[in-house]
Length: 231
Image (cartoon, rainbow, N blue to C red):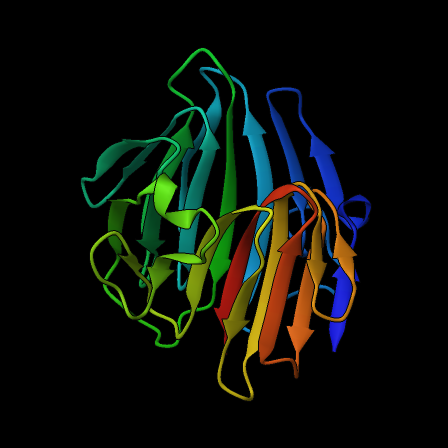
């Protein structure tokens, strides 16, 4: 089953310094029918103006991933980590038993990033933070893993049985295969992508997929997207 969620179906919050689009219930937006997809709990598409950001605030029992698409994002937390990430980098924070952190834009230009939350497969973990670099050229016409339980060089570790992939497709199709019984989440960053059943996703459209364990992704000219392999 493939459920398509057009970009226009997302909840939009505009605070001036912050513009957010929520794919799932978050903050002031609550829909009991749109709370999660497997362990995927939050998928926010955020734009923060220069010199602004989210001040120190607490989290517990959540795996939080930030992927910078443009600009700079500065992270600081109560475990002593302080890092500035930009395009080609990803950060993963395990809130575990409790952590306080802030995320701000230290630059003059706006920062555009994805904020993605997952429920961990194990509770009461020790809080931790990690920032990794990935090769942006390596995601051209292939699915590049950037976050996974099966981590390695250039792949941030996460405490859940999932993998986040990025790809840039330049006229070529890619095929993703997974074990029976798992889920796929697709979010198109730019361009148009045709799925194997003929469904076409446009910019910022998403698909929640179950029962389809070999998925062909074909761009219409050029496209980029996020694919998450979920339990």
